[in-house]
Length: 316
Image (cartoon, rainbow, N blue to C red; front, side, top):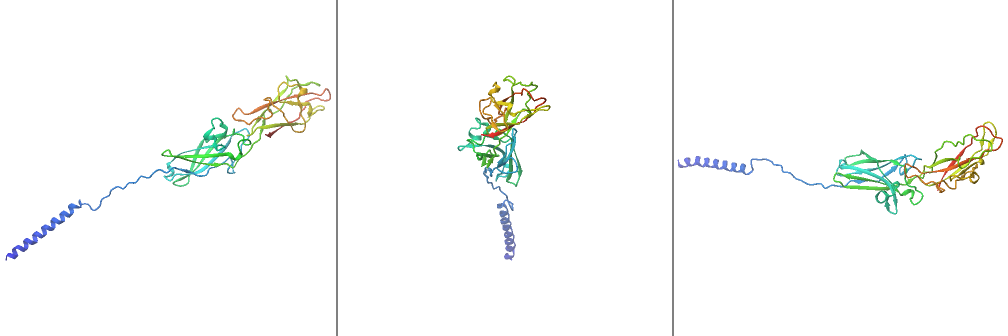
C-alpha cells in the first residue's frame, strides 16, 4: 500500500525535474536557433595603370603629319585599367612633347620653349569592361612645333597619358613616337606683282619697288629659290625674264639687284639680313620679304605684259 502511495509521487517528481531541465536548456540558448554577426575587411586602393600610348594624325599609327600653315589634330590613345573598378578612374590627362638629353620638355622646360610641348584639350573614353577603359586624348593645335632636323631628332617626340583615381593616385606611361614628319612649305602672300602702267624705256627705282611677302609654313628653317619666265605682251613684243630683278634688302638700286632667270636661284639674303626664313613659333608666323624691280625696253613692246615667278622652299 505504501509503495502504491510513493510511486505516483516519484513519477510526479520525475516529470517536474524533467520540466526544469528542459526550461534550463531553453534559457541557456537564449531562445534562438541562429544568429548573424558582421565580418569586415578593408580593400586597399590599387593605383590605375596606363598601357602603351599610340599617337597619330591619320591612318598610320606612330606617325604625325604636319599641315602647312594650319593646325593639325593629333590623337593619342591607351588602355587605362583600375582593378578597383573602372568607375574609380576619375581623370586622364595627356601631353605630347620632345625629349632632349633625357629630359622631357613637358616636365622640365616647356615654359621656356612652348613649341616643344603640347597639352591635350580633352580626353574621352570608351568602356572595355568593368576595370578597363580605352582613353583617347586629342591635341587640336599641333602646329608650331619645334623643328625636328637639328638638335631634336624626329623620333624624340613622346606622348604621356596620366590617370588619376578617386584617392588622387596618379600613374602614367610614355611611348616614343616613331616619326614626326618634316614639312617644308611656303606661302607667297601676294597673288601677283603689279608694276602698274609704265612707259617705254622706264625703270623702277628703289622708291617704286614692289615687295612680295614669303611665309614659312613648315617645321624647319628654309632657303627660298626663285625662277621666272619671259613676259609676253598682249599687243607687241616680249619683255625678257632678265629685265625683272630681285633683292632681299629695301632701297637697293636696280643695277645692283639680281636678274631673274629661267633657272632656280637662291635669294641670298632677305630684309632681315638672313639667308633663311625661320619656322614659325606662334600665330604671328615667320615671314620675310623680297623686293622686285623691272626695266621696260625702249622699243618693241606694248600692252599687258605677263610672266610667272616661281618660289621654291628649300629646307636648310
